[in-house]
Amino acid sequence: MSLLEIDGIDAYYGESHIIRNLSMSVEEGEICALLGRNGAGKTTTLRCIAGATPPDVREGHIRFKDNDITGVPAEDVSVQGISLVPEERRIFPNLSVAENLHLAEVVNNKSNTWGRSLSFGHKGMTTEEVYDQFPRLDERKDQRAGTLSGGEQQMLAIARALKQNTDLLLLDEPYEGLAPKIIEDVEDAVERISEAGTTILLVEQNAAAAIKLADRAYVIDQGSIVFDGSADELREDDETRERYLGV
Amino acid sequence: MSLLSDVLVILLNGLQQGAIYVLLAVGLSIIVGTLKFVNFAHGALYLVGTYAGLFVALNVPLSNGKLAEWGFSSFGLDIGFFAALIFVPLFVFGVGLLMERYLARAFYDRPDTDQILVTFGLAIVVQELFRVLFGSNSLPFEQPERILSFGSFAGLPVSGPIALPIVGNFPQWRLWVIGITAVLVALVYLLVEYTDFGLVVRAGTRDAEMVRLLGIKITRPYIVVFGIGAALAGVAGVVGGPLNVVNPTIGTNILVPAFLTVVIGGVGSIAGAVLGGIVFGLTTAALVSFAPAWSQVGLYAIAAIVLLTRPQGLLGDEEVTP
Picture 1 (cartoon, rainbow over the protein chains, first blue to last red):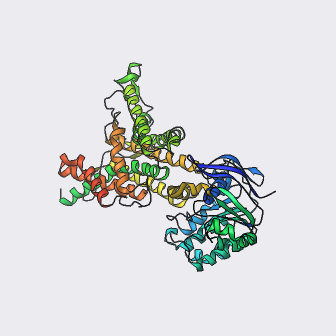
Picture 2 (picture 1 turned 45 degrees about the horizontal axis):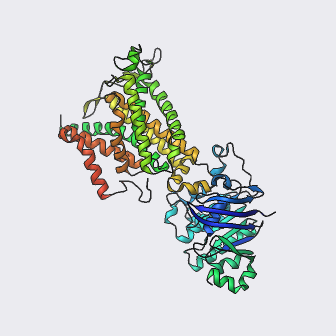
Picture 3 (picture 1 turned 45 degrees about the vertical axis):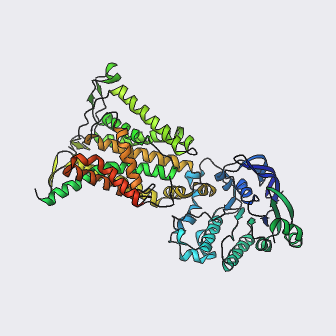
């Protein structure tokens, strides 16, 4: 059984049909890459998994740890152990770094858990562990998150996801807009997270960088999967890379 | 009467007038800022608060309206002003919860115009309902003489003049209004700035979807925010009632100044609502003293100037849009 299984989903933004009969799976412990051009449907796929609306999934099923999570609201998908680090990071610029991180723990408050079952495999990291991993954030913990550099904001978004009790981390374009040196830092962080046992689904336009880390890769085009194989296979498949990724 | 004492009197009167705006605007601002819900029924909550305050605190004779026709010659529990200060906010808090659950929630994803239409409609229904029940004429809402009187303890005197240095005699009740407002606004501020509830509210103001992606059920803080905003409007009704006339149109009359206060302060900013309320209060008090004919125009002139020079409001955040 795969950790995450997507079975023939069709998803719409209003009346626009974005995802067409898409099937894919993510195995426990791996780094899986979902690659494709701008507008191919990568972010939409992640939003479907995370329960964000829109899009609206009208056909097919998404199963996580063998539970059907199709159409389950975002907050309930999250407490089952899926965290999304969205495109453009979406940290809260009006809150301090420490407050941004603390927000990931609020889910455990009684007022929030009342009447809901939280079923995490992993415990989230403590604040100390997060600051150990990202010393820059510790230095800037009282600063408004909006004043951080792009790289620091990305670190904060990842750190926030790690503080959640996450089994599957969805990373949406984590390298976007970052300098090469910072990309290396993010890559290191992703590797450490993976080694600690968290499964990762990595969405990137920067295919070369993603393939470097990934065990397996999918390529998406016009809302459907057009390639499915190991990272090595994709590296050698010049035609697919040329045609769908432009590299 | 020296010039200094005149200025101080205007200052105190302005703060008192501003306090009512502040109570309304803080509640309205957190509702508009957090929930992105434009609540034109906020004045109706003030109306409900005023009548509920009258009902709990006093017992007034009725001569008009259906209630009088049905044989109720008077209205009220007459259990004191302090009781009104406790029970009315709780009651209006409950009204706010019901309003969020059964009205506002269905309109969060709809355009502002729909929200305005439905809440303005509700405000008119409430106003006319009160008119039918109590008649159009004003009811007397006397200032409380003492609060907290139990048995042999005579209580604290809250009405009548108090001698202040320089100013001389000043109506004591007005100082109480300022004090009660300051305490309540400070409590709301602490709640929003220093609790997890407030953290969720501030984060949700920026990006509600991201809050949900962190596993937080935002509907719960939302309904509480609405309740708190409503309760503050209820308090405004109770403390403001004895200072103004009490009739069914007070809700719609106070709505525009309350919205202007929110807008000039900056939507979603508690500090902005306080500043906006004080600016409006002082302007009104100053104009009433020096140019009474212009006192109604002052608010609009200030609002226009602020919006032309700082569209996001005095303490508003440019990136937050209602």
